[in-house]
Amino acid sequence: VEASLVVDNAFVVDKVNPRLFGSFVEHLGRCVYEGIYEPGHPKADEEGFRQDVIDLVRELGVTTIRYPGGNFVSGYRWEDGVGPKEQRPRRLDLAWHSTETNQFGLHEMVAWLNKVGGNELMEAVNLGTRGLEEALDLLEYANIPSGTALSEQRRANGSDKPFDIRMWCLGNEMDGPWQTGHKNAEDYGTLAASVAAGMRMIDPDVELVVCGSSAHGMPTFGSWEETVLEKTYNDVDFISCHAYYQPENGDMASFLASGVDMDGFIRDVAATIDATKARLKSDHKVYISFDEWNVWYQNAEASQTAKGIGNWPVAPHLLEDVYSVADAVVFGDLLITLLKNADRVHAASLAQLVNVIAPIMTEAGGDAWRQTTFFPFALTSKYAKNGTVLAPKLDSAQHHTERFGDVDTVNAVAVRGEDGSMTVFAVNRSLEQTAQFTVSLPDDGAYSTVEAQTLHDDDINAKNTVDDQNRVGMQTNTSAAISDGKVSITLSPVSWTAIHIA
Ligand code: AHR
Image (cartoon, rainbow, N blue to C red; front, side, top):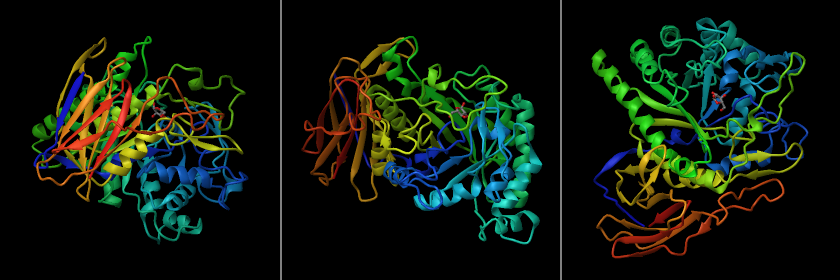
Protein backbone atom coordinates (compact mmCIF):
# COMPACT_ATOMS: atom_id res chain seq x y z
CA VAL A 1 0.00 0.00 0.00
CA GLU A 2 1.04 3.64 -0.38
CA ALA A 3 1.09 6.75 1.75
CA SER A 4 2.49 10.23 1.32
CA LEU A 5 3.13 13.25 3.48
CA VAL A 6 3.60 16.81 2.23
CA VAL A 7 5.71 18.92 4.57
CA ASP A 8 5.45 22.69 4.31
CA ASN A 9 7.19 25.14 6.62
CA ALA A 10 4.37 27.64 6.16
CA PHE A 11 1.82 25.44 7.93
CA VAL A 12 2.61 25.30 11.59
CA VAL A 13 0.49 23.48 14.19
CA ASP A 14 2.46 24.79 17.16
CA LYS A 15 5.80 24.69 18.87
CA VAL A 16 6.11 21.52 20.91
CA ASN A 17 5.82 22.17 24.61
CA PRO A 18 8.66 20.16 26.21
CA ARG A 19 6.14 19.14 28.86
CA LEU A 20 4.66 16.80 26.24
CA PHE A 21 7.48 14.45 27.22
CA GLY A 22 6.56 14.19 30.86
CA SER A 23 6.23 10.98 32.80
CA PHE A 24 4.70 9.82 36.05
CA VAL A 25 6.04 8.40 39.31
CA GLU A 26 3.35 7.03 41.60
CA HIS A 27 3.72 5.29 44.94
CA LEU A 28 2.48 2.09 43.32
CA GLY A 29 4.12 -1.31 43.31
CA ARG A 30 7.84 -0.96 42.65
CA CYS A 31 7.86 2.37 40.81
CA VAL A 32 9.44 4.26 43.74
CA TYR A 33 10.75 1.46 45.98
CA GLU A 34 13.11 -0.88 44.07
CA GLY A 35 12.57 1.43 41.09
CA ILE A 36 14.09 4.85 41.48
CA TYR A 37 14.91 4.36 45.19
CA GLU A 38 16.67 1.32 46.58
CA PRO A 39 19.14 2.00 49.40
CA GLY A 40 21.73 -0.75 49.52
CA HIS A 41 21.59 -1.51 45.81
CA PRO A 42 25.17 -1.69 44.43
CA LYS A 43 24.39 1.22 42.09
CA ALA A 44 22.53 3.37 44.64
CA ASP A 45 24.12 6.64 45.75
CA GLU A 46 24.27 7.92 49.33
CA GLU A 47 20.61 9.01 49.13
CA GLY A 48 19.47 5.59 47.91
CA PHE A 49 18.84 6.67 44.30
CA ARG A 50 19.75 4.03 41.74
CA GLN A 51 22.27 5.53 39.34
CA ASP A 52 21.57 2.91 36.65
CA VAL A 53 17.92 4.03 36.65
CA ILE A 54 18.90 7.71 36.59
CA ASP A 55 21.07 7.04 33.52
CA LEU A 56 18.16 5.37 31.71
CA VAL A 57 15.73 8.13 32.72
CA ARG A 58 18.13 10.68 31.19
CA GLU A 59 18.46 8.61 28.03
CA LEU A 60 14.66 8.36 27.82
CA GLY A 61 14.49 12.16 27.63
CA VAL A 62 11.60 12.75 30.02
CA THR A 63 10.86 16.28 31.21
CA THR A 64 8.13 16.89 33.80
CA ILE A 65 7.40 14.20 36.41
CA ARG A 66 3.88 13.89 37.82
CA TYR A 67 3.92 12.76 41.47
CA PRO A 68 2.88 11.10 43.87
CA GLY A 69 -0.20 9.62 42.13
CA GLY A 70 -2.48 8.46 40.62
CA ASN A 71 -5.05 6.71 42.70
CA PHE A 72 -2.53 6.71 45.54
CA VAL A 73 -2.76 10.45 46.04
CA SER A 74 -6.45 10.28 46.91
CA GLY A 75 -5.60 8.78 50.31
CA TYR A 76 -2.17 10.37 50.81
CA ARG A 77 -1.10 12.64 53.67
CA TRP A 78 1.87 14.55 52.31
CA GLU A 79 3.11 15.31 55.84
CA ASP A 80 3.85 11.60 56.33
CA GLY A 81 6.60 11.82 53.73
CA VAL A 82 8.61 14.71 55.21
CA GLY A 83 10.89 14.97 58.24
CA PRO A 84 13.23 12.39 59.78
CA LYS A 85 12.76 9.07 58.02
CA GLU A 86 12.76 7.02 61.22
CA GLN A 87 9.74 8.97 62.46
CA ARG A 88 7.66 8.59 59.32
CA PRO A 89 4.55 6.44 59.77
CA ARG A 90 3.67 3.29 57.91
CA ARG A 91 0.20 3.68 56.42
CA LEU A 92 -2.38 1.71 54.52
CA ASP A 93 -2.49 2.55 50.83
CA LEU A 94 -6.11 1.81 49.97
CA ALA A 95 -5.70 2.37 46.25
CA TRP A 96 -3.22 -0.48 45.77
CA HIS A 97 -3.88 -2.53 48.93
CA SER A 98 -0.29 -2.00 50.03
CA THR A 99 1.69 -0.62 52.95
CA GLU A 100 3.31 2.77 52.35
CA THR A 101 6.49 3.12 54.40
CA ASN A 102 6.94 6.82 53.57
CA GLN A 103 10.69 6.42 53.31
CA PHE A 104 10.41 8.43 50.11
CA GLY A 105 8.48 11.71 50.02
CA LEU A 106 8.48 15.22 48.63
CA HIS A 107 12.07 16.13 49.59
CA GLU A 108 13.40 12.88 48.13
CA MET A 109 11.45 13.47 44.92
CA VAL A 110 12.86 16.97 44.49
CA ALA A 111 16.40 15.72 45.24
CA TRP A 112 15.98 12.88 42.73
CA LEU A 113 14.72 15.25 40.01
CA ASN A 114 17.70 17.52 40.59
CA LYS A 115 20.01 14.56 40.18
CA VAL A 116 18.31 13.50 36.97
CA GLY A 117 18.86 16.97 35.54
CA GLY A 118 16.58 19.59 37.03
CA ASN A 119 13.38 18.02 35.69
CA GLU A 120 10.15 19.79 36.59
CA LEU A 121 7.90 18.43 39.33
CA MET A 122 4.14 18.30 38.69
CA GLU A 123 2.59 17.74 42.10
CA ALA A 124 -0.87 16.34 42.75
CA VAL A 125 -2.97 17.26 45.79
CA ASN A 126 -5.36 14.88 47.50
CA LEU A 127 -8.98 15.82 46.82
CA GLY A 128 -10.25 12.33 47.73
CA THR A 129 -9.94 12.03 51.51
CA ARG A 130 -8.79 15.65 51.92
CA GLY A 131 -9.56 19.12 50.61
CA LEU A 132 -8.80 22.83 50.60
CA GLU A 133 -6.88 23.19 53.85
CA GLU A 134 -4.42 20.39 53.15
CA ALA A 135 -3.84 21.61 49.59
CA LEU A 136 -3.07 25.10 50.91
CA ASP A 137 -0.75 23.65 53.55
CA LEU A 138 1.20 21.72 50.97
CA LEU A 139 1.52 24.76 48.71
CA GLU A 140 2.71 26.87 51.66
CA TYR A 141 5.21 24.18 52.64
CA ALA A 142 6.52 23.92 49.07
CA ASN A 143 6.52 27.45 47.70
CA ILE A 144 6.68 30.05 50.51
CA PRO A 145 10.34 31.09 50.99
CA SER A 146 10.34 31.38 54.81
CA GLY A 147 8.80 32.96 57.89
CA THR A 148 5.67 30.82 58.36
CA ALA A 149 5.16 27.62 60.29
CA LEU A 150 5.10 25.36 57.25
CA SER A 151 7.83 27.09 55.23
CA GLU A 152 10.07 26.98 58.32
CA GLN A 153 9.26 23.30 58.70
CA ARG A 154 10.46 22.71 55.14
CA ARG A 155 13.65 24.61 55.91
CA ALA A 156 14.17 22.61 59.09
CA ASN A 157 13.70 19.47 57.02
CA GLY A 158 16.67 20.42 54.88
CA SER A 159 15.36 22.55 52.03
CA ASP A 160 16.25 26.14 52.64
CA LYS A 161 15.04 27.18 49.23
CA PRO A 162 11.38 26.76 48.28
CA PHE A 163 10.59 24.00 45.78
CA ASP A 164 8.79 26.54 43.56
CA ILE A 165 6.41 23.97 42.08
CA ARG A 166 4.52 25.45 39.11
CA MET A 167 2.17 22.68 37.98
CA TRP A 168 -0.43 21.21 40.33
CA CYS A 169 -3.08 18.56 39.70
CA LEU A 170 -6.34 19.20 41.53
CA GLY A 171 -6.80 15.57 42.56
CA ASN A 172 -6.75 12.49 40.36
CA GLU A 173 -9.46 10.77 38.31
CA MET A 174 -12.22 12.02 40.57
CA ASP A 175 -14.80 10.78 38.02
CA GLY A 176 -13.77 7.15 38.64
CA PRO A 177 -15.94 5.10 41.03
CA TRP A 178 -12.71 3.30 42.07
CA GLN A 179 -11.22 6.54 43.35
CA THR A 180 -11.04 6.98 47.14
CA GLY A 181 -13.42 9.88 47.74
CA HIS A 182 -14.90 9.67 44.23
CA LYS A 183 -17.26 12.58 43.51
CA ASN A 184 -19.85 13.53 40.97
CA ALA A 185 -19.02 16.35 38.55
CA GLU A 186 -21.00 18.96 40.49
CA ASP A 187 -19.29 18.24 43.80
CA TYR A 188 -15.84 17.86 42.33
CA GLY A 189 -16.19 21.01 40.22
CA THR A 190 -17.25 23.03 43.27
CA LEU A 191 -14.36 21.68 45.36
CA ALA A 192 -11.78 22.13 42.57
CA ALA A 193 -12.92 25.72 42.02
CA SER A 194 -12.47 26.60 45.69
CA VAL A 195 -9.09 24.85 45.89
CA ALA A 196 -7.94 26.61 42.72
CA ALA A 197 -9.02 30.01 44.03
CA GLY A 198 -7.38 29.36 47.41
CA MET A 199 -4.11 28.20 45.88
CA ARG A 200 -3.98 31.33 43.73
CA MET A 201 -4.34 33.46 46.88
CA ILE A 202 -1.00 31.97 47.99
CA ASP A 203 0.73 31.83 44.61
CA PRO A 204 -1.14 33.46 41.71
CA ASP A 205 1.23 32.01 39.14
CA VAL A 206 0.67 28.31 39.80
CA GLU A 207 -0.55 26.34 36.79
CA LEU A 208 -3.52 24.20 37.72
CA VAL A 209 -4.79 21.00 36.14
CA VAL A 210 -8.42 20.13 36.79
CA CYS A 211 -9.48 16.50 36.42
CA GLY A 212 -11.16 15.58 33.18
CA SER A 213 -12.29 12.04 32.46
CA SER A 214 -10.23 9.00 33.36
CA ALA A 215 -11.09 7.44 30.00
CA HIS A 216 -12.75 8.48 26.75
CA GLY A 217 -15.29 5.71 27.31
CA MET A 218 -16.40 6.73 30.83
CA PRO A 219 -20.20 6.92 31.06
CA THR A 220 -19.90 10.51 32.28
CA PHE A 221 -17.44 11.55 29.55
CA GLY A 222 -18.41 14.86 28.02
CA SER A 223 -20.91 15.94 30.65
CA TRP A 224 -18.15 15.67 33.28
CA GLU A 225 -15.91 18.04 31.30
CA GLU A 226 -18.80 20.43 30.69
CA THR A 227 -19.81 20.69 34.36
CA VAL A 228 -16.29 20.83 35.75
CA LEU A 229 -15.07 23.42 33.25
CA GLU A 230 -18.14 25.56 33.77
CA LYS A 231 -17.24 25.85 37.45
CA THR A 232 -13.46 26.19 37.17
CA TYR A 233 -12.70 27.59 33.72
CA ASN A 234 -11.10 30.93 34.57
CA ASP A 235 -9.05 29.54 37.46
CA VAL A 236 -7.41 26.56 35.76
CA ASP A 237 -4.87 26.21 32.98
CA PHE A 238 -5.35 22.60 31.96
CA ILE A 239 -7.94 19.88 31.96
CA SER A 240 -6.61 16.33 32.10
CA CYS A 241 -7.21 13.35 29.81
CA HIS A 242 -6.20 9.79 30.70
CA ALA A 243 -6.16 6.87 28.25
CA TYR A 244 -4.88 3.29 28.34
CA TYR A 245 -5.11 0.88 25.45
CA GLN A 246 -5.00 -2.91 25.18
CA PRO A 247 -6.17 -5.45 22.62
CA GLU A 248 -9.80 -6.31 23.22
CA ASN A 249 -10.98 -9.87 22.44
CA GLY A 250 -7.75 -10.44 20.54
CA ASP A 251 -8.62 -7.73 18.00
CA MET A 252 -5.09 -6.63 17.07
CA ALA A 253 -6.16 -4.57 14.05
CA SER A 254 -8.23 -2.24 16.24
CA PHE A 255 -5.55 -2.19 18.94
CA LEU A 256 -2.98 -1.05 16.38
CA ALA A 257 -5.29 1.85 15.50
CA SER A 258 -5.63 3.07 19.12
CA GLY A 259 -4.23 6.44 18.05
CA VAL A 260 -7.55 7.08 16.31
CA ASP A 261 -9.33 6.95 19.66
CA MET A 262 -6.79 9.21 21.36
CA ASP A 263 -7.12 11.72 18.53
CA GLY A 264 -10.92 11.73 18.88
CA PHE A 265 -10.63 12.09 22.66
CA ILE A 266 -8.46 15.19 22.28
CA ARG A 267 -10.81 16.73 19.73
CA ASP A 268 -13.84 16.08 21.92
CA VAL A 269 -12.24 17.70 24.97
CA ALA A 270 -10.93 20.62 22.89
CA ALA A 271 -14.47 21.20 21.62
CA THR A 272 -15.79 21.27 25.19
CA ILE A 273 -13.07 23.74 26.21
CA ASP A 274 -14.01 25.97 23.27
CA ALA A 275 -17.72 25.77 24.01
CA THR A 276 -17.16 26.67 27.66
CA LYS A 277 -14.88 29.56 26.72
CA ALA A 278 -17.55 30.89 24.37
CA ARG A 279 -20.36 30.47 26.89
CA LEU A 280 -18.41 32.26 29.61
CA LYS A 281 -17.21 34.95 27.19
CA SER A 282 -13.74 34.32 28.54
CA ASP A 283 -10.39 35.32 27.04
CA HIS A 284 -8.64 32.73 29.16
CA LYS A 285 -7.09 29.70 27.46
CA VAL A 286 -7.28 26.18 28.85
CA TYR A 287 -5.11 23.44 27.38
CA ILE A 288 -5.11 19.67 27.70
CA SER A 289 -2.75 17.86 30.05
CA PHE A 290 -2.78 14.27 28.78
CA ASP A 291 -1.32 13.24 32.09
CA GLU A 292 -1.75 9.48 31.91
CA TRP A 293 -1.33 7.55 28.66
CA ASN A 294 0.08 4.17 27.72
CA VAL A 295 -0.66 0.59 26.76
CA TRP A 296 -1.88 -1.28 29.85
CA TYR A 297 -3.14 -4.86 30.13
CA GLN A 298 -5.60 -3.96 32.87
CA ASN A 299 -7.13 -7.39 33.31
CA ALA A 300 -3.84 -9.26 33.49
CA GLU A 301 -2.63 -11.00 36.63
CA ALA A 302 0.03 -8.31 37.02
CA SER A 303 -2.68 -5.76 37.84
CA GLN A 304 -4.39 -7.76 40.61
CA THR A 305 -3.89 -6.20 44.04
CA ALA A 306 -3.49 -8.12 47.30
CA LYS A 307 -6.56 -9.11 49.26
CA GLY A 308 -7.34 -9.67 52.94
CA ILE A 309 -7.45 -7.60 56.13
CA GLY A 310 -4.00 -8.80 57.17
CA ASN A 311 -2.33 -8.61 53.77
CA TRP A 312 -0.86 -5.20 52.86
CA PRO A 313 2.48 -5.86 51.14
CA VAL A 314 5.27 -3.31 50.82
CA ALA A 315 6.16 -2.47 47.19
CA PRO A 316 4.57 -5.57 45.63
CA HIS A 317 5.08 -6.48 41.98
CA LEU A 318 2.09 -4.68 40.45
CA LEU A 319 1.21 -3.63 36.89
CA GLU A 320 4.54 -4.98 35.65
CA ASP A 321 3.45 -5.34 32.04
CA VAL A 322 6.14 -6.66 29.71
CA TYR A 323 5.73 -4.86 26.41
CA SER A 324 5.92 -6.41 22.96
CA VAL A 325 6.93 -4.92 19.64
CA ALA A 326 3.24 -4.49 18.76
CA ASP A 327 2.68 -2.62 22.04
CA ALA A 328 5.58 -0.30 21.25
CA VAL A 329 4.21 0.40 17.77
CA VAL A 330 0.86 1.44 19.27
CA PHE A 331 2.77 3.49 21.84
CA GLY A 332 4.72 5.25 19.06
CA ASP A 333 1.43 6.04 17.31
CA LEU A 334 0.12 7.61 20.54
CA LEU A 335 3.19 9.87 20.58
CA ILE A 336 2.51 10.84 16.95
CA THR A 337 -1.06 11.66 17.96
CA LEU A 338 0.03 13.85 20.86
CA LEU A 339 2.39 15.74 18.53
CA LYS A 340 -0.30 16.24 15.91
CA ASN A 341 -2.38 17.93 18.59
CA ALA A 342 0.45 20.05 19.99
CA ASP A 343 -1.71 23.18 19.73
CA ARG A 344 -4.19 21.77 22.27
CA VAL A 345 -2.05 19.37 24.31
CA HIS A 346 0.56 21.40 26.19
CA ALA A 347 1.53 18.72 28.69
CA ALA A 348 1.46 14.92 28.86
CA SER A 349 2.72 12.24 31.20
CA LEU A 350 3.63 8.76 30.13
CA ALA A 351 2.22 6.50 32.85
CA GLN A 352 4.50 5.40 34.37
CA LEU A 353 8.30 5.58 34.54
CA VAL A 354 9.81 2.52 36.26
CA ASN A 355 8.45 -1.04 36.75
CA VAL A 356 4.77 -0.04 36.75
CA ILE A 357 3.50 -0.08 33.12
CA ALA A 358 6.89 1.41 32.43
CA PRO A 359 9.58 1.86 29.77
CA ILE A 360 12.25 0.99 32.37
CA MET A 361 12.34 -2.23 34.40
CA THR A 362 14.51 -3.19 37.36
CA GLU A 363 15.31 -6.18 39.49
CA ALA A 364 15.79 -5.66 43.22
CA GLY A 365 19.54 -5.73 43.77
CA GLY A 366 20.02 -6.41 40.07
CA ASP A 367 19.82 -4.92 36.59
CA ALA A 368 17.82 -2.13 34.98
CA TRP A 369 16.82 -2.43 31.31
CA ARG A 370 14.77 -0.89 28.51
CA GLN A 371 11.34 -2.18 27.49
CA THR A 372 10.29 -2.00 23.82
CA THR A 373 8.35 1.20 24.52
CA PHE A 374 11.52 2.93 25.67
CA PHE A 375 12.72 3.39 22.10
CA PRO A 376 9.88 5.36 20.49
CA PHE A 377 9.73 7.65 23.52
CA ALA A 378 13.47 8.34 23.57
CA LEU A 379 13.70 9.05 19.85
CA THR A 380 10.57 11.21 19.73
CA SER A 381 11.77 13.22 22.71
CA LYS A 382 15.23 13.58 21.21
CA TYR A 383 14.02 14.95 17.89
CA ALA A 384 10.74 16.69 18.80
CA LYS A 385 11.16 18.13 22.29
CA ASN A 386 12.29 21.57 21.11
CA GLY A 387 10.73 21.44 17.68
CA THR A 388 7.75 22.80 15.79
CA VAL A 389 4.99 20.55 14.51
CA LEU A 390 4.03 21.11 10.88
CA ALA A 391 0.47 20.48 9.73
CA PRO A 392 0.37 16.85 8.58
CA LYS A 393 -0.92 16.82 4.99
CA LEU A 394 -1.18 13.06 4.93
CA ASP A 395 -2.66 10.85 2.26
CA SER A 396 -2.68 7.21 3.25
CA ALA A 397 -4.26 3.99 2.07
CA GLN A 398 -6.89 2.84 4.53
CA HIS A 399 -7.96 -0.47 6.04
CA HIS A 400 -10.93 -1.60 8.05
CA THR A 401 -11.00 -2.13 11.82
CA GLU A 402 -13.88 -3.36 13.92
CA ARG A 403 -13.71 -0.61 16.53
CA PHE A 404 -12.82 2.42 14.44
CA GLY A 405 -14.10 1.62 10.94
CA ASP A 406 -11.73 2.60 8.12
CA VAL A 407 -8.46 4.00 9.41
CA ASP A 408 -5.33 5.40 7.78
CA THR A 409 -2.84 2.55 7.43
CA VAL A 410 0.05 4.96 7.88
CA ASN A 411 -0.07 7.72 10.48
CA ALA A 412 2.69 10.31 10.44
CA VAL A 413 3.74 13.75 11.60
CA ALA A 414 6.67 16.04 10.75
CA VAL A 415 8.54 18.10 13.33
CA ARG A 416 11.05 20.81 12.35
CA GLY A 417 14.00 20.97 14.71
CA GLU A 418 15.59 24.16 16.02
CA ASP A 419 18.48 23.55 13.63
CA GLY A 420 16.14 23.36 10.62
CA SER A 421 16.38 19.59 10.32
CA MET A 422 13.14 17.69 9.87
CA THR A 423 12.02 14.50 11.60
CA VAL A 424 9.06 12.52 10.38
CA PHE A 425 7.59 9.96 12.75
CA ALA A 426 5.57 7.28 10.97
CA VAL A 427 3.69 4.17 11.96
CA ASN A 428 2.42 1.36 9.78
CA ARG A 429 -0.71 0.04 11.53
CA SER A 430 -1.34 -2.83 9.14
CA LEU A 431 -0.87 -6.41 10.31
CA GLU A 432 0.02 -7.66 6.81
CA GLN A 433 0.72 -4.88 4.33
CA THR A 434 4.07 -3.22 3.71
CA ALA A 435 3.71 0.50 3.03
CA GLN A 436 5.66 2.58 0.52
CA PHE A 437 5.86 5.99 2.14
CA THR A 438 6.90 9.22 0.46
CA VAL A 439 7.67 12.54 2.14
CA SER A 440 7.72 15.71 0.01
CA LEU A 441 10.02 18.23 1.66
CA PRO A 442 9.89 22.03 1.57
CA ASP A 443 11.10 23.18 -1.81
CA ASP A 444 14.24 25.00 -0.70
CA GLY A 445 16.87 22.40 -1.50
CA ALA A 446 18.04 22.43 2.10
CA TYR A 447 17.79 18.71 2.66
CA SER A 448 20.31 16.18 1.42
CA THR A 449 20.65 13.38 3.98
CA VAL A 450 18.20 10.94 5.50
CA GLU A 451 18.64 8.49 8.36
CA ALA A 452 15.80 6.27 9.43
CA GLN A 453 15.43 4.00 12.42
CA THR A 454 12.65 1.46 12.61
CA LEU A 455 11.15 -0.59 15.41
CA HIS A 456 9.92 -3.83 13.89
CA ASP A 457 10.31 -7.57 14.37
CA ASP A 458 8.99 -10.53 12.41
CA ASP A 459 7.68 -11.67 15.78
CA ILE A 460 5.36 -8.86 16.85
CA ASN A 461 5.25 -10.43 20.33
CA ALA A 462 9.02 -10.15 20.86
CA LYS A 463 9.90 -8.51 24.19
CA ASN A 464 12.87 -7.48 26.29
CA THR A 465 13.06 -9.46 29.52
CA VAL A 466 15.48 -9.78 32.42
CA ASP A 467 17.08 -12.76 30.69
CA ASP A 468 17.11 -11.21 27.23
CA GLN A 469 17.37 -7.50 27.84
CA ASN A 470 18.35 -6.44 24.31
CA ARG A 471 16.14 -8.75 22.24
CA VAL A 472 14.29 -5.74 20.72
CA GLY A 473 15.80 -2.41 19.69
CA MET A 474 15.86 0.15 16.92
CA GLN A 475 17.33 -0.84 13.56
CA THR A 476 18.56 1.31 10.70
CA ASN A 477 16.02 1.29 7.91
CA THR A 478 18.25 0.99 4.85
CA SER A 479 15.37 1.52 2.41
CA ALA A 480 15.29 5.27 3.15
CA ALA A 481 16.47 7.39 0.21
CA ILE A 482 16.35 11.09 -0.64
CA SER A 483 16.31 12.72 -4.06
CA ASP A 484 14.75 15.83 -5.62
CA GLY A 485 13.26 16.99 -2.33
CA LYS A 486 11.51 13.67 -1.71
CA VAL A 487 12.20 10.93 0.80
CA SER A 488 11.00 7.42 0.05
CA ILE A 489 11.01 4.60 2.55
CA THR A 490 9.51 1.16 3.06
CA LEU A 491 7.56 0.65 6.28
CA SER A 492 7.09 -2.96 7.36
CA PRO A 493 3.75 -4.09 8.78
CA VAL A 494 3.45 -3.30 12.51
CA SER A 495 6.37 -0.89 12.61
CA TRP A 496 7.25 2.53 13.95
CA THR A 497 9.91 4.68 12.32
CA ALA A 498 11.76 7.95 12.98
CA ILE A 499 13.06 9.52 9.75
CA HIS A 500 15.59 12.26 10.37
CA ILE A 501 16.25 14.52 7.40
CA ALA A 502 18.97 17.17 7.34
O1 AHR B 1 -1.30 4.55 36.24
C1 AHR B 1 -2.03 3.60 36.98
C2 AHR B 1 -3.35 4.14 37.50
O2 AHR B 1 -4.19 4.39 36.41
C3 AHR B 1 -3.30 5.46 38.22
O3 AHR B 1 -3.02 5.35 39.56
C4 AHR B 1 -4.70 5.98 38.04
O4 AHR B 1 -4.76 7.38 38.04
C5 AHR B 1 -5.15 5.36 36.75
O5 AHR B 1 -6.39 4.76 36.88
